[in-house]
Image 1 (cartoon, one colour):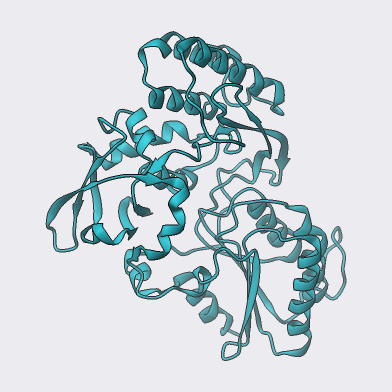
Image 2 (cartoon, one colour):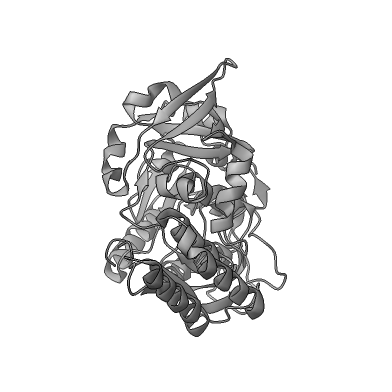
Length: 406
């Protein structure tokens, strides 16, 4: 889809809003699963009445909030690609928001706690941006998505957290308890490639963060007799067939006492490839017989662990459920960012004048008998700020230590 285009007048904005309000229920599998039609229509009517008095950023934020009111993570208005972001990366460690990466000219902010954004306390700024994130998922998803919104120039301005989209003041506290502020200037989102020159608070990258852009990859950990497999997004069918063959070759010819499948960076994609190509082969080697419906005897080796977290979402979540239900995997990490029973398979559309990109869910997946807000790990392991700065991975460390138990 093309970049966002500012409509020329209020009438064009209103036409786009009416189009959005009509398309969501027309395209969605069940648009009013969390909000009533009357409440949704009231929100749309209220926004339309305010359009003449709102600035561009406030209108876009209003469109995003309307889509988010549907309540599932796949139904949304995307942040326009030609919006701008302040050159810092944030992450929630518990209830503390920290700067994990920053452009070199703002190096003093690296590692600091965020106290205020535009003179608004961080917790209040967080509550403001969560109005743009569907509440139908869970707290971990809010923690996952909110950091990117808290550095978006136009979003902060549209929520009236900053007086302009041209600059923002962030107030910080360093580990010595010293308070200071930094005035940031934004850059285009398309300049994200500049992040390779940013400073990072990590002293080294843990294994699971070494190849975040690779769809799938694995490493045989010889000393631990463990096969580590990271599945970030489904590759092509041919690539996955070749990858599966390589994985099976290791399982068949090397001593593998522990198989680790890491889904912590899997935000979704095609869920069928894992189910039909890789999963059956893993089950075949984990059980004495390949049977999806009948009770199965677990082989003595290898132990199977699956790492999950706040970014495990959509197809990644489905894959985690399949591994737990069909291969008796032991889940380790944080609760997932998505719900086991979820609306998904989003389909896109574009608003006629503004070219804002809309997405709606077209299917419902019921993966659990009980409707829980997240797929919960069998063993909860949280990454602390100290873990992050030292490049440690407490999830992998726990798995390796546990795999040594008889």
